[in-house]
Image (cartoon, rainbow, N blue to C red; front, side, top):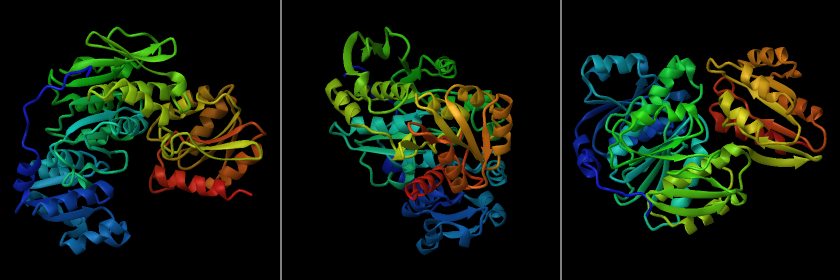
Length: 468
C-alpha cells in the first residue's frame, strides 16, 4: 500500500442515518433519475415523501410515474410551496439550481436542503473515492472502478456517471468502496459529504449559464474538498492550471499526476511508462502502449485513476492488468462503425468546447465534425482554432449551431448547417473522403434536441448503423 488509509471521525451515516428518516416528511424536487432514486430511498427508510417536478406527471418518465404506486404523492412544483416549508428535509436533483424558488423557500423556513449525492452518501457507510473535473471524469471513474474490481472489497461505481448513489445505498455493504463521479451541480448541495479520495482532473469553462463565471464554477468544484482532513487524499492534475489552483483549498495530502513531466511525488510518465513515486516508494505500473484509449487526455485519465486506485493498496500488477483490459465507455470517442473506408465516432459526451478540442486532438486523420446544441454561454473561438489543419468541414446543428458557425466562418473553416442529426450525418458522409473520420463531438449540451447526451449518442449510433 502506497498511501495510508487512516480512520477519520465519522458523521451520522449508514443505519443510524436511515433510522433517523423514519416518520419524517421529505420533499424531492426534480424527478429525473436522481430524484426518483432519492424518493425511493426516503420511502424505503420510512419517510413520508412528496415528489415534485416542473413537468406534469403524465409527461415524466415511467420510473417517476411509478412513484405513486409506492405511496409517494407527485405534484407540480407550483403546488409544492407549502409542503417544502413544512418539511423536515428537502432533497433537490442536480438539475435544480441552488437558488430555485422551492429550495430558497425551504431555506427561508429553516428546512435543510441537500442533494441526492449527499443523501446517498449518508445512507451508506462505505468509503468513497470521488472524481470531478470539467472533462474526463466519466472515463476516469469507470476505469477506477474497473481497477478496483480486481481487489476483494465490493465496489460500486455511481453518481453522475448515470447510476445515482441513492439507488444502491441501502444494499451496499459498509466494507465496500464507492467510486463516484460528481458534478459541480451535485457538489453545490453537499453538506457532510466526505470522500477519502477526492480527484479534480481539470477545471475549464463549462456550465457558465448556471454558475455565472469560471470563478464560481471553480468554487463549486472545490467543494469536493470541504470535509476532507489531513488523513485523506486529494488527487490533482499538475498540468492543468484550474486544478493546481485548488491545491491550497484542501487539507488532504495532495497526490499529483502529470503527463508532461516526471514528478517526485505523484503518478507520471518516465520513458513511456506510468510511474508512481509515493511515500518513498517507486513503482513502475504499465507502459503507455497498454492504454487502449485514443488521445493524450486519456493518458491523463489513466494516470488519475492509477493514483486513486493506489490509495486502496491494490497491487501495481492488478492495475497493469486493469489498464490493459479497459476500453472506452459509451459516448466517449466510441467507434460506431467503418463504412466505405470512413470511421464514424460517437463522442456525444463532449458537452463543452474543451472536451471537443481534446477529441479533435485524438485523431491524425482528416475529420468532418458534427457539432452544436445548447452552448451554455461558451466562447466557440477556441474550437474554431482547434479545427485548423484537422477538420475539413464542420456540420452544425441545434440551438447554438449559428453561433458555432459564425465562429468557424470567421476562422475560415467550411461550415454546413443542418436541421436534424440525420441530415447532419448525411452531409458529413458526403464530405468525407476514404481514410477520413466523421466525428460527433458537439461541444454543447443536448437538451435542445434530445433528453440527454446518451440519447443523442444513441440516436447517432442508430442512424450511422442504418447507413447503406
